[in-house]
Length: 293
Image 1 (cartoon, rainbow, N blue to C red):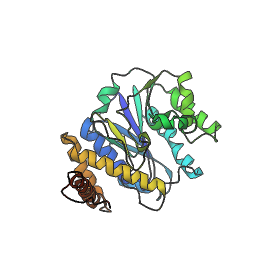
Image 2 (cartoon, rainbow, N blue to C red):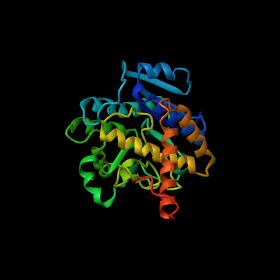
Image 3 (tube, rainbow, N blue to C red):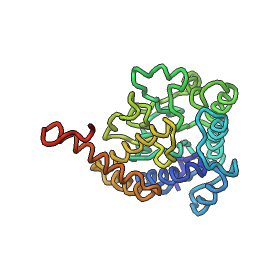
Image 4 (cartoon, rainbow, N blue to C red):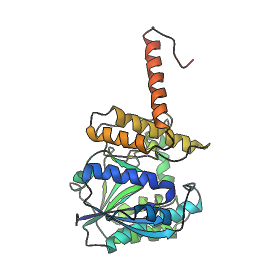
């Protein structure tokens, strides 16, 4: 077992399938020699009980649906991020603790890079497009789906800042204040790539070949909200990236996603996307009419 770095997350039944993919993708590139500390609901604890490397602590009976990010229920869940960090620090003599949202997907041996970066706390900027930098004041400069801390003081400061400023946007906007109190290292744009990087949410920007990990809800129900459609559009974008990549690990991830897709949505969607692109190409070279008319 790696004695230097611990991992932690928050998992409910509503994101359990995504957490299992996170864990699978992490181990694909890093191996299974890491201890996880997970704050979870009871069904998730039952599902993870056979994993000796996962320490579960139940904080709620059952969460079957991912809460709306603007609702108080969501604040109650993200508050468990700080608790998961505390569990990890109390669970061993680690040099670093890494928090991971359940909907991250690793695409490279990221921890090798982390070891080369100095700082008490490692965070990923949202890297908004210039037209959307105004979101920094409300949604935060940093994304809270990933962080690595090398000081036991950070999670307590984060908890107190979050609890004392309920009008700021969940757990994320308060991270704007961290630079004045801790030595912060900003991770590069190849880390923590999410839908918010693209000005056109339904036509995401290309994913760079050196991507280290994605931030994507792949298995959430597809209902009638704009956010659900944005998540699914970005999910398809990520799956296509993995399918077309020449990296063997990416192909393995693609096959795992298709296997885990109980709704069977990605396979026909990939076929339709390929047909659409093929139709556009035929239209451009004059050999056929566009399929989009």
